[in-house]
Image (cartoon, one colour):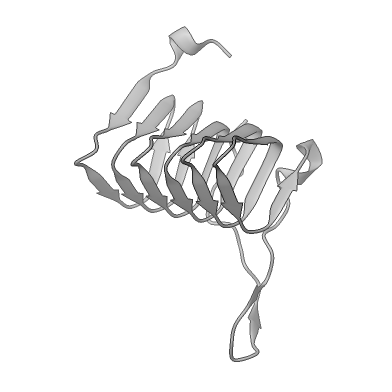
Length: 138
């Protein structure tokens, strides 16, 4: 991957986006995103950044909080302050000391496009989960 040719989009700490996103290059989040997204290159969630929703990118670095599905065709790195709460699929996963992943995790090239688990509710019902992110990346 040629980092020089990739456009970088930054969401500042005092900013918030609600809705679905499609970013062609590198996205750096220091603020808050509520919605689903597809990032064409690298997604970086900064130390105070929050992503609430599903996201897919070739490379993902989380040092903030992600609540939702995270799919990386190449690699996910969870930094020392990072926390992923949800369904995780990646070709490779690295969790640095202090980082957390709470949820179902599948690692390996074959796992990247696996379907999410069914949801089991307190009332005993089960619903089939469907990913909200596009499978067109990569």
